[in-house]
Length: 207
Image 1 (cartoon, helix red, strand yellow):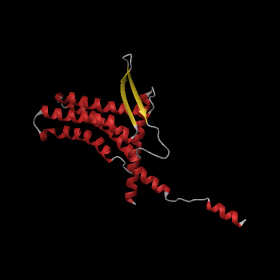
Image 2 (tube, one colour; image 1 turned 45 degrees about the vertical axis):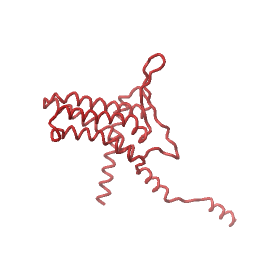
Image 3 (cartoon, rainbow, N blue to C red; image 1 turned 45 degrees about the horizontal axis):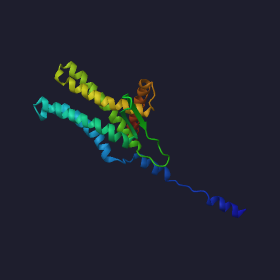
Image 4 (cartoon, rainbow, N blue to C red; image 1 turned 90 degrees about the vertical axis):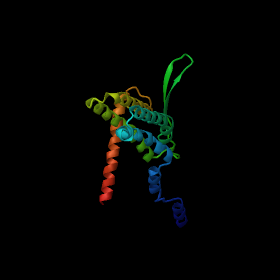
């Protein structure tokens, strides 16, 4: 009887540090370069739009610089950061009959190996959601202030960043047809998680 009790206790392994180690892995940034460039081009385009009058008096130079930053942002987010940070990608392909098809893919999550972390995913989605909202604000400010020469650039910014947002939400939802309802639900969920994170951080700092 005593021997059986010893054998039973030998089979039990208590790993108290697993939860802390798992939380630490989720909070790490595994792709710092991709995370940096995910925000760099789009934030630079916004800052350049706001401060271009201080840097240069040439409208053409400001227009070309901002458009170049928006184009680099569109390419990097579509082809690099989405694949590395959240395991999603989308593209257009033409079949043998000449028909255009949109392809939306999501990498299957492995129970043991994760290609991204929660921190990277949060940074990816917040950058993808907030920046088009800022360009929408620029659109209304351009219309109300009658600075119509910037209208084409602002529309280009909204179009390029909204295209990536739409494509990745389509990937996240698995290509479902009712993308509008699912997108609004997903966006509200991401913003709620952001507010919850901020409130949790403020509570910890106060204690």
